[in-house]
Image (cartoon, one colour):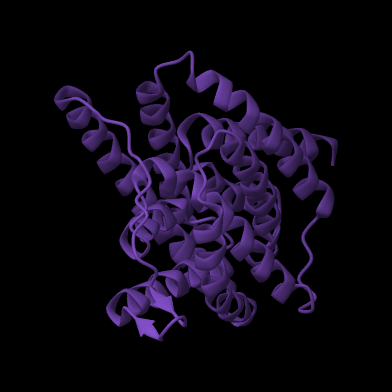
Length: 276
C-alpha cells in the first residue's frame, strides 16, 4: 500500500506539471495510473473525476486571478454540459469494463494525435509571429428583453458541443480540455487566449456533476490513492505554471506527447485481449 501511495503521488505530480506548464493533457493519465495501481476501469474513471475536478478548480482560480477566464460564459457552457455529464456517468456505470477500457484507449490515441498537431501549428505560428487575443463582446445567443431574440444556429451549436463535452467527461472520467477549448471558440466565439482558462471552469462543473451522479452507484475507488494523486496534482500544477515561465514549453510538450503515446499503446495492448 505504501508503494502504491508513493506511485500515485509521483504520478499526480507529473499530471499537475503538465496541467500547469502546458495548460492541459495531464488529466488523461489519471485513469491509466489508477488502472496500473489495481483499480478496475469503473473505479479508475470515478477516481479520475476527483483528480480532474479538483485540479481544474485550482487552475481556474489561478487563471481567473490572471484575468484569463470569462466566468459567465464558462458557467453557462458548463451548465448546458451537465446533462451530457449525467448521461455519460450513468452509461459508464452500466458499460462492461472491456468496453470502457477500449474506449479510453481510443481516446488516448486521439489526444496524442491532437497534441502532436497542436505542436506543429505552434511551430508554424511562432515562425509567422503571434498576437495577443482580446475578448470579443459579441451579441448574446438568446435574449428575452425588450423582445425575445434567438440566434438559433449558435444556440444549437452550443447545445451539441456542450453535450458532447459532458458525455466525454461523464463516461470516461477525463477533463476533455482538448475538446473544451475548441468547443468554446466554436460555440461562444471565445478568443484562444481566454478559452484555455475558461475551459477549466467548464471541466470543474462537468466533473462535479458526473461524480455526483456516480455517488449512488456503489462504485468506490481507493480514496487514499485518489487523494494522493489529487493533492500532488494540485501542487504540481502550481509548480508547472512557474516552470512554464522559465522553460521551453515546446520541449516539455513534445516529451509529454511521447509519454501519452507510450501509455496509449500500453492501454490499447491491454484493451484488445479484454475484448476478445
